[in-house]
Image 1 (tube, rainbow, N blue to C red):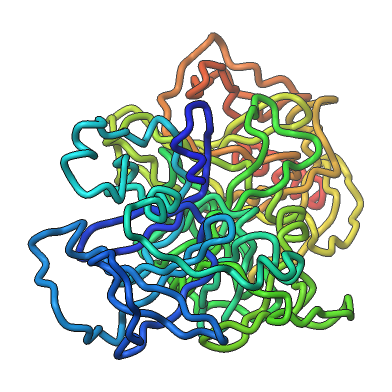
Image 2: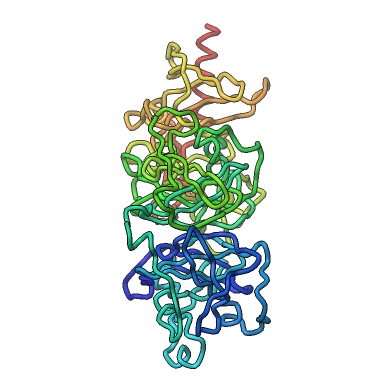
Length: 506
């Protein structure tokens, strides 16, 4: 059944395909598999006029419906010669199976009752009763096909799903997305997929690590884009790659959950090249990986054999629980209006208003703070080896290497007092101009939240006591209405390092 057509059902995942230039949505749960279309279909006797023939697949003879003329009357019918790029989408409805011709796969996307508009009964009675709803979301709009309605049409014939009738356990119990990135074929269970995204330009990020390489607009915000090859232990994508398609996956939340976070999961985008297949696969197509420590396969279940070759099947549970993805999944850069997008990592030349500047928002303990993005060199996961050093009077915790530079790690308690942390999971690396070149320093913080372009608000005299040298008076007002203190971390680092220099001279 097409569950999304029923009132009150939300976030059903749909596969989007192209049919005669139109976008058609099918519930992913109804898609058994997708195969290339042969140059000619087998003859098939049927009373329904749009049955183009049959596909013989692993001993099954499956009727194939050509919906092109039904959905778009301007398309010329006749003949059974098909473009080599055409595909056949095999659908399963209870014990029935049938197939539809399509031009290609667009991807997957969740649709809710807010995005689907049912057609009136009169309209469906007068027209072709293959669909009963339309949808519009993001850059896509089209029709929602109902497999149950299609097999219920007078004169329609279907085949019996022999695999399902003989042994349901032989089918992997959920749809699988098969995709490619840099020549590596991968498969991912739909349970952890929020949507797939078409190829587009990526946005820069203030923290370009080996894992987090860019940002991408999705659902009115900018979410992190990760290097899929690095995530899986297969090397890295070429440096500087700034475009590509994506699969948005749902991650578990970090512990503790960032203050103010209300969603039950996080979101990150895996950078990919193409979505190649959507479907269910028989258990005989899967070869499990029994070893736990195979290089490049720590997030994998094993090998999945598809129509176009082998693919590495990713473990959805391990992917969602991956610590790096969990931490990145709760970083959102929320756009304030439909036409004003905050571009992470870009400085003041991209101004939406003359008085606004970008700020990196983070938390220490249960408090949120921000610092000017222009003074942030990069953000690192706090996994770098740190060489302990005497703290002296500047709060020096140690030294660590980053991008060929020796960076001092400073004690945030000299900026925040007792509210500070020494074991946060991220390091914010600041930079300041210096006669000898850029001078860098790092502070550990607990969580990262977003980059917001905001205007400074003065709240009174600046408190520059000896104990809190980096705590300025200005604040910014975040999108949720809360005020957030602005910390001049780069200025605080300069003062602390100058204290160390003075001490060394004496």
